[in-house]
Image (cartoon, rainbow, N blue to C red; front, side):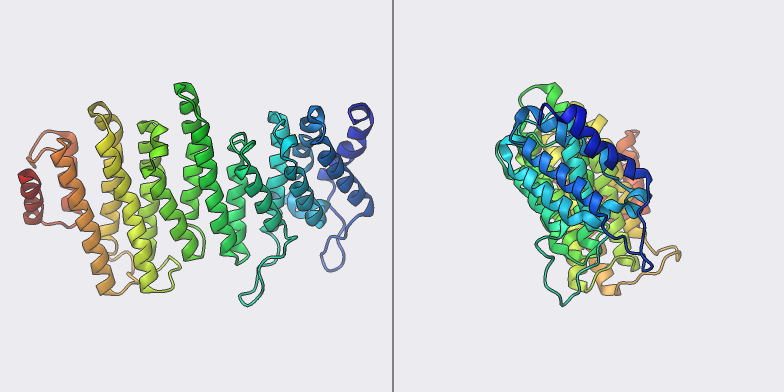
Length: 423
């Protein structure tokens, strides 16, 4: 393999397959792309060489890495390209490559790029296949979604390679979550979310005490993990998927292992992604834009959203040193106030129709107000907010003005402040 790959095999397989990216596949009268026997031989041949290369550590990266030049990743190329007729070949090949853990562990950056290109293509292709009927059996064992999930599960659970998997794998998992939604198979979305959590734990456990390594992961990989969970907490049609994502997202900020992530990255992720996400979910519920099947399901999701807004705030306020409060916690608190203003006043101006029963909306309002009162009491007792509503302290003044805009009366606010000052 080492002798013939550079001069003979690479051009024979990679050169021809790469040129196919610019050649739309011929379709039948029914719009179906028929398999090309010559193309099939090249694809299966290159898959066999990739599998074989994992037995030769010195060639694995060079051969497997070439997949990133071959597979159309997105858009029109993927929709029209003849490769999509061979999704079972490619997903099965991906599984067999990954099964050789000893070979995968030797991959360099180029090799990983090729392997993840193969994973992403299989995941994206699975999302374009027909959905599962409500009364049908689960996805077939040779379905590319199942094969891709199985392969990623093995990679992330293998002690030898789990910590070496690049954070780019989160893009493959996001695609699988979307595939589970489009194909009426929420079990795939939930299982893929669990793999994202596993990825986060593996990456954090691999971090040493070096500040540079921690900063690098926090700024790139960890934030992508947060964004992936946040996306799954809002967009899927299935409430159990959204609820699982919201619960995981809250736990992510409370877990002791995530204390490695610097407070500035934590607060930025909360204020930019998580708190606004929770606010949008609540507003969508109240205005009927959310796909919630029942009032019980709605209250479960509401509780999870309120928890995502307040639990991490309280947790990190307790752990924040005074020098971090003004630079990191204040922006987060400002985001919380902005979201609550929208949540507690939705429909009050007559510009939006409230779709939930009055009793349910009143319960939501009371719970949100209760959490707000508890948060302000904690901020007062911690010395973050001043009790004088006419103070020149910017954070305190903005807080009390915002609370009044939410519809909380001055009498109720004065009672909050008095009670917090007495404790």
